[in-house]
Length: 344
Image (tube, rainbow, N blue to C red):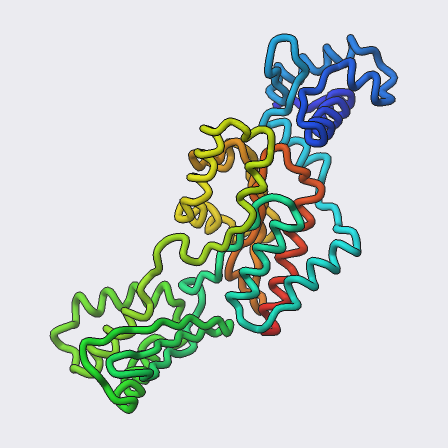
């Protein structure tokens, strides 16, 4: 695409900025009257027409002003906004809310989604730690009641997943310890995703040749590692914030939006794509590629534990969100959650 002239860049940046602030189409007379551009309304109008032809602006009605397209917002985010730091007071409040919780990881993550929503006044989302991408340190099996066992997966990055298993028969703790040793001898230090793949192959090809102890150990581990339903580890707060935005005043559009947000499995798939990003990643409008969310933007960043990316957090809001404010909020939250988890 041909580069924009300096005047086109200025008019486009100001149109996006003032549309974000007002929610209204922006006209050439408004820009000429409100801003010191030292050019006539006719010149601005011609420049806006050129930007519309190039796909950066569009008219909502024939006689109205213009609003940004997804391409216009993308230019604004990439070329104008950049990554601006939070003010010190905003930074302190985020750190206090995220880092001030107890050491329970699930509660820290829940509080992070609430904090993102409160700070951004949009929807805060946090995808919980993706255990399958972590390396296994050990499996523990603890008898808690008759035919009930608590499985505890511990990863090398100190993530812990527990699950209460219902068994067909009752086993003493000594047998459970032996099963855990069998499991750990076979699978310790491997990524849990590889463990799951190897386990399936072993159960399919070698089942008849396995001793009863090994078979029970593998079956218990399989139950403990069984994948959760998509969306089980997605924490989401503040959906009502989007419904207050004028763009979603239409009831049909609002219902479609709520349904799309509540389909957590699809959101998880999109967020998984961001897990290997090194920095903030921004999806604008149609880039979101999920039905019902094409009028929204998604700002995400991975969070880490001891340097390893284990999850993703972010903010969902209208394409007309204040990117210059949301981007540093997401970046700061990711850094603070990473620091909090690394010292937990």
